[in-house]
Image (cartoon, rainbow over all chains, first blue to last red; front, side, top):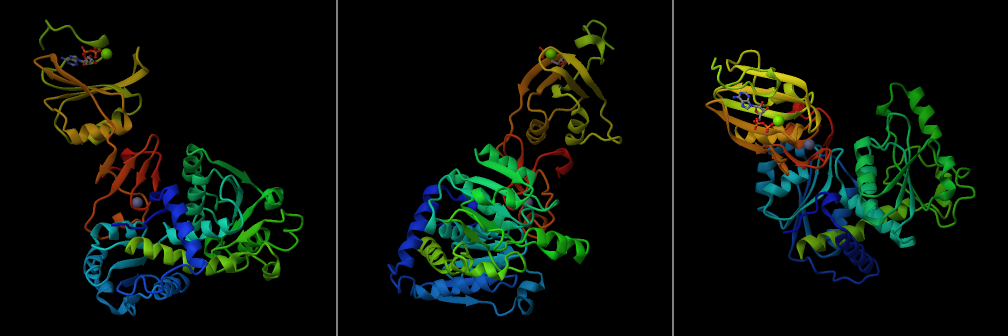
Length: 298
Length: 156
Ligand SMILES: Nc1ncnc2c1ncn2[C@@H]1O[C@H](COP(=O)(O)OP(=O)(O)O)[C@@H](O)[C@H]1O
Ligand SMILES: [Mg+2]
Ligand SMILES: [Zn+2]
């Protein structure tokens, strides 16, 4: 039984194969009834619109059925039932479970109590492997994954997408450039681990210093809650904003990605530039999740 | 006191009849070793501690000697995490009866508490913590938290 819990569990052959598979699906090479006898349980303990809808869309495109609890608050789950018990029960109703939960490690726990495959759709500040897989998928649509220069900008401390993506990129010998406000740097333990794995991690104070040498700029959200007052938030967020001026003279093949939703990190004027790929990135969630569902349900 | 036994290693500590000598402790870690084996101000065992003793092998070392007590496997596993080069000497009738090293376990089940308050292992669930022992860090196998310092402070 195959679970997809953490990007750390996946090796390069598995990821490459999954990306390949998603490429086939995106070019309409798939059987629209391949999961017609399957039921997917969506267990979302936290609100999420995009991830949930794209899993539902992926399941529907393959002919499968999705079931879910209407509202967690109204169910036995909020009455103190352990996640372990909920998973034991729900895995009796469905052929696979997609789980979103506020606690880190929840999906790992679920995989230990489930009798069917579990896909992690985000656990707290922890892992969100389907996001990372669609990030990699989007990059390889326009660039080879190997040996490229990837800039990560924004809140790299709390942003889980940044943690998983840098880890995944270390499988591809990429050079990672990190640019973040004071206090929101990539955790030192993670930097150490990436370097131990042979990945070059370079810290920059200003994005201007490196932007012209990047192949990918991955932008993440800076949350207002991380700052003592809105003045200091605006100060920081404006100096980390991606604008058309910033992108003058960059490599012609540069792609700008963002896991969305964005707030002020990318000026809407950038949307019309050829570098902007974040909406395509979010659309890619469907073929990538179709490939994941076929992988665990095959 | 039995005078006929030559006092071992530099007279720092008097000999014991039966018990355990934990030798070659990474210098400075003796008090953490005591914590691991549950020796506090209120225990009755007679314990001697020597810290920063010169030692040919590692420069400086700590030594802990406990009367009438032998270590459990689980205690030796924990000691291995903070002092991988110790030798555990079981003393019977004033003599070194057995001597063994320790091995760092690959995984720790229910040994350390995950410092991440958001980790599922700190919620009300029927599981215990699980850490992978890597060369310089402990890795939470649930939330990926890395413990790099004060391992004893995180022990349950
Ligand atoms: N009867 C005893 N009481 C207290 N400590 C002892 C006793 N016998 C040996 N030791 C200590 O146990 C450790 C191991 O002893 P031994 O095997 O003789 O030395 P080494 O490991 O240096 O070859 C040494 O630190 C020694 O001082
Ligand atoms: Mg000696
Ligand atoms: Zn943890």
